Length: 318
Image 1 (cartoon, helix red, strand yellow):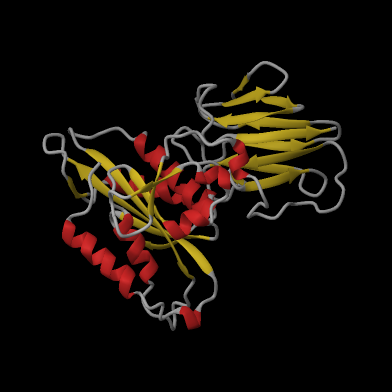
Image 2 (spheres, rainbow, N blue to C red):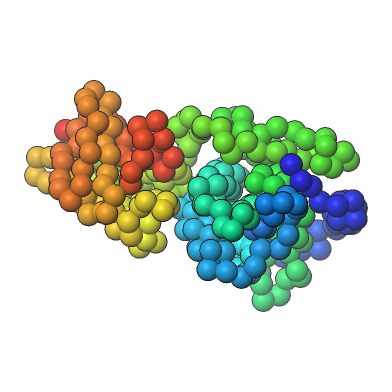
């Protein structure tokens, strides 16, 4: 792992110690701030160096921005080699950062160099841009972005995580001995219970549903497909009802419809859809339809059965 130089660490410590929270009086709520910084790693020196403005860099930032949208993040600032994103919950910030790393890791190298993504997470006050001072929490998050292909979160962020997501974190005395920071293991698979608790997206259909109907869960979003909303679309385009980030995911990947007596999934993608039934065989769907029944998992694109990233959990009620 590669870390910030000593002068930058001292600068970070001074920032923490001197932060007098001048924006407290103008506070409109707590947000969780993510700074995602791209670097290039030389094949010979293995040194971190500023990423150049290439098409590959732009595509990488677009991919990270799509991931942030899945977790309801708001992009506050985009530079040629970085993104600053605000999330409403610590879980959304951490899980979104983990998926950003997973997506970036899947990118191929170029001319011996590779892209490195460093992410820092800190909590801060939601500010009124028209009247407030500069948001120091983003500056702190940017200084936490120290680890090659890593995620570092402040102790304040980790303290608010639910117990399952907190399992991804490990306190680190190596980075800042005087500060409480945690390194997040984004390579570890997170149990689906990690997305539990009240959804940050409201449940649809507060009244009793007319059967058949379908419940979907993807990351932090839950959705009903029933009489009130008889059809949903899935894909990487931000206009879909369920947004799935991934290079093998089409803009509009598939459509799920409630019919009179059944729920049907219709694939509209290039790479197909895999339906893993809890009580039945796996079904590969490409340019055709299949009835959904019972419980299972929907995977978009050419994924192996063991790869559950970006999965959509479903349950049909008949």
